[in-house]
Length: 66
Image (tube, rainbow, N blue to C red):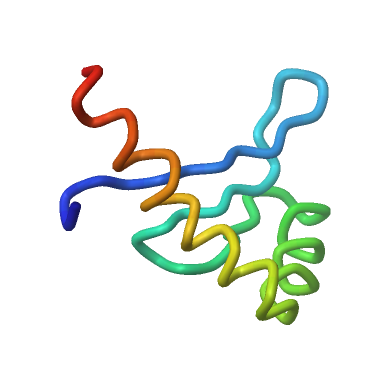
């Protein structure tokens, strides 16, 4: 499970403006709007913990399928 990465991309108008990366354990913003939102989302530790758990819940389940 160490080499598995869970990514949640947040897009608007076909452009990615923020992303949660399980390897980093935080949101990263790619636009000015995305950076501001990433800073706000990173302060919510319960949301970050839940997204980190998604790596095990979603990725582990699908490893055998792929």
